[in-house]
Length: 240
Figure 1: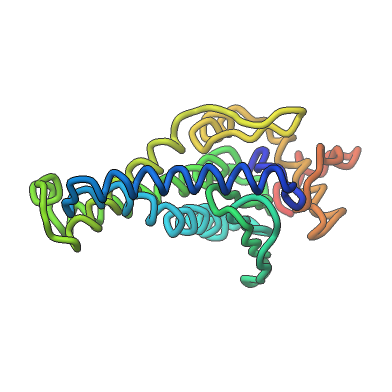
Figure 2 (figure 1 turned 180 degrees about the vertical axis):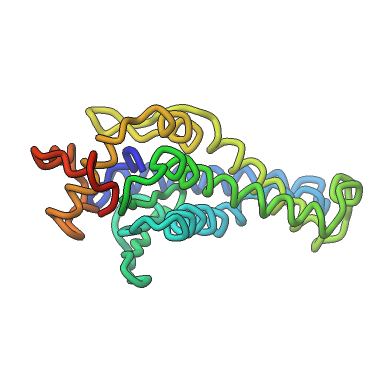
């Protein structure tokens, strides 16, 4: 993939307090709204928030699974930002779970130069595609008419929240934009799909060459990758 989100070190005390205050304020507003003139339908927004974190996990799993199925090497999956809370290994990939699971990214590298632009675009699409698939499955199982009907049933309200969260997360990630600064910009999945189709073979060759040279260290944050070997092996042999 192009430029995954930069890894951050441990959060500062100010960042932790800012996040905590923001979280408490949001929960307080939701609680106040639910308590005043309570009705089960008011729980819909809360269910959307509750499903956001598991959908983040399935979103990043979609990226990783697509890369694996397309024959690329997955080196790192990160859920959240801030201080690293738990590190696990899923096969050859490192799973890094962080303090604030609001966003995430997957770092992978091509192992060949067969249709690299299309494969890169598919890896980008797989994340929001997984979100939209979750929403579609809920719609198919429950039925669109029933799903759009106001209800007092807690189970149905939860499914409505899941469908809305999946739809919102999928659509938001398909909007083309970039975030970050200082040479560490990270494209959204939508922008990544677009940019993937314009990249030259040399871009992917540099990634392969860097992984050959650095091994798993390639998946740590780096500003740039080394140039391919002078004999430009990638023009002659399109495999790793």
